[in-house]
Image (spheres, helix red, strand yellow):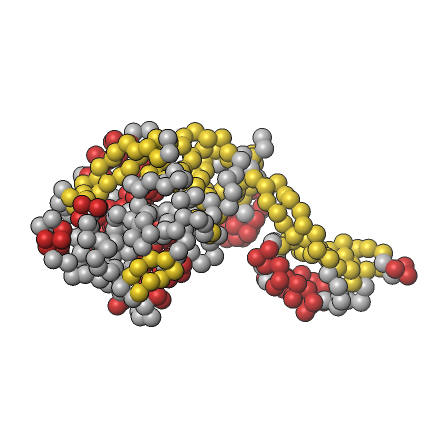
Length: 429
């Protein structure tokens, strides 16, 4: 299975993600040329070599009207405060770590930006305005959908942080051309890489505080923390905001699994670098390769009962499956005093364990439950559809097999007056 693994030991931002993914392409220069011909107003992407702690990688700069919003445009950056719905370039410094993509409360005088018209860099955008821009780009519809889904996550987070509706959210720098370019680039690269599965490490969010228009906020900032709900994150000794709202939203949208790097055969590695230097290499690392199955930990909850009817036992099994169990099965056993009974076993995981325990006590007569943790080996699974029939392919550890979903085969057989064997023959499964 083609797998993309993203390592976020120094957090994540749009420009660093796009740079890391760009290095995975066979012809990154061609991508840059095609990107620059899309028609994003006033935008040009520049791909540059970068070195962080001896690691050679790529830095991506987005120029707006020939200028990059970076240090040369923010020499005054500690002389004003910033509204904290921002997308940073991820060049971390305490209280103002990133050189790129800030949502500013403003307003700034033109001389503060080297004479450049600040309206070009600090305009506010709504979701509808962003959608209007995206609709005119020469990209596939599914990429446009990805872009708007990412902005939807950011809008939801901002609306929660500011206690207002999504319709009333006005994006600051996240809505400007350079940030739209970052999001668009990542969405295009994800489509071109076409990974079957995207896995990401736990995300380093940094530590300390960030100065905003509302005062000094803890890291991660409220909008970023909201997006990262349910995702494993951690802090550290680096006192900077390492994960930006846009970086968080991109990962939330595309990543299907967070955890350690799976066993995989690597075909290419990419390094996306920020501008600032730290004791740790300031980069996002991405791998693309093939996984050959995986392993994980499961929990088996079990109990013995000898005073339940077959009907009650069947009902309990159904409710446990409805409650999130991965599998439920029973075994006939002989219990103490020679009594015939039933061994109930439920397979679950940490996320559902507490709920499953409650359901077992609710729907069975047991007064005690045993827990056993196990490692399991799993074949990678993918689905494809043929004439309404879903076909599951499982592969890994030197094995490969395909099988049609029974419910689909049965429905097709009934609809067309065929037997199950005739239907399987028809679809070659």
